[in-house]
Image (cartoon, rainbow, N blue to C red):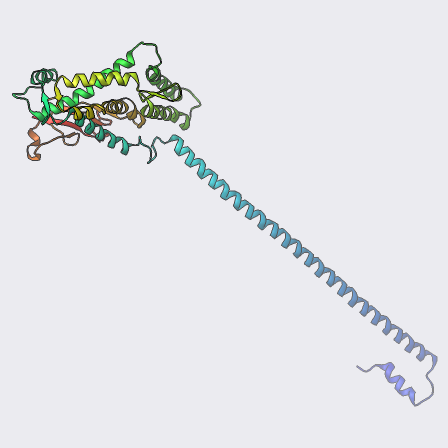
Length: 370
């Protein structure tokens, strides 16, 4: 739409000068235009300022958010590390707890079930070597052997060499056990009764600890495991050190008097039934008797108590039907149903021996069949 004031001014250009009213109007219009321009400019400035402030605020807010996100990420990483550390710590505690409450011995422990089984078999071989094969260079005292057979309730028409050897092996074990039992029952008071003074109160003490952990409130799996762990450790020490040589006056070594006396008695006992003619062979065999006695005591009195449950041993009675699962000997499998035990020379070792369903065999009994 055309501006009337502009048209009026055009018309007045060729005519006479405009009247005062027109000039005033033009002036006011120009002033108004200037004012509007200023207002527009100011509005633009204010808008720009407001926008810039808003942008700055948003930027600051964004920066603050980024800082907070970074801090939260750091906290998350710290929490992850702490969680991992706690998980490792809990795992270590679980391993420690399992170790404390587990009765299994380490694979390299000489008392674990594998090594114990091997040593029981080695003991039988060592006893066999001491008895000898009763053949060349060995005199057999038949009358004394016949009396010994009667003592073990064996009836036989003649002296079978294999049977005599097994009877003498049993006699070796029985003699050592009898001598050891006598030592533990002794009331002597000297420096050589240390093993007796340890072993006699040990079993009652362990039994009382077991009762305490099971019959008093406040107990736990760890506490209940302690008596068994103590028993394993105590008998492990006894198995290693009991009746070993004695150190006196700092560097001097003395064979334990019990071992010395037992060695002489065992040699004398077995020599009643057989004599080794060759002096060098006899000396070689007799020099091993001390170690043989310690091995028998270690297995029968100490090392079997390092197992959980405790390893038991059982002598098979004469005339009992042969069981190849628990007995070892020489027989024909086709005739096994008709065979009975004539004599047991080495006991059965295992756990839960009276319970066929739970029985665990370490070594089978050595028997002669009839």
